[in-house]
Amino acid sequence: MKKLFFLIVFSLITGISFAQVERLNNAPIYIDDTLIVVGVRAQTTDKELLEIRTKLLKFTTIRFIEFDVIREPSSKKDVEGDIQFLSLEVDCRDGYVGRISHSFEKGDHSIQGFYRNYSKNTYNRAFFIGKLADNYIYNENKAKEDSQIELNLDQKDIDIQKIEEKQEKKTFSSRIKKLFFWKKIR
Image (cartoon, rainbow, N blue to C red):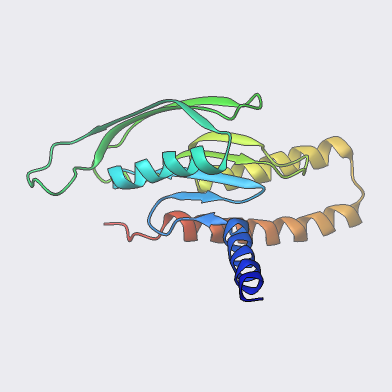
């Protein structure tokens, strides 16, 4: 009876741990069943870059074809310098492939990376690589506006859709802020 009890408890704990959404507090990555967001900023450490690669390999089919980082030399031995240059190429293995190269200048606090959106909404952009945060929200709204024009929706549908867009924009922008703005900008 004890063995059966321990087996059930262990199975429940294992099932719950595998059902969790993978979100790292110390690395700029977010993985759930419909959205994968990966971002790199100049202050991203080598440990965080390694965690990004590990989590993508473990939980997704997305692979890096190329991932190169050049850091500025640091005066201290234990401290990593900021990233000066980032070059990455991503293959989602479902037809979406992208490449980005970016030089981080002094004071550049932009977030470079990609997202893959698996939701079934037709107006969502499924894949994007480049500067994240503001770009994503702009492209989402532009795509929604284009789809509204093409479909010639009546006024009630447009009003309802605008309300939904405002709610979705708020939730996505808050999600991006939580994911990538956890470090205060210097």
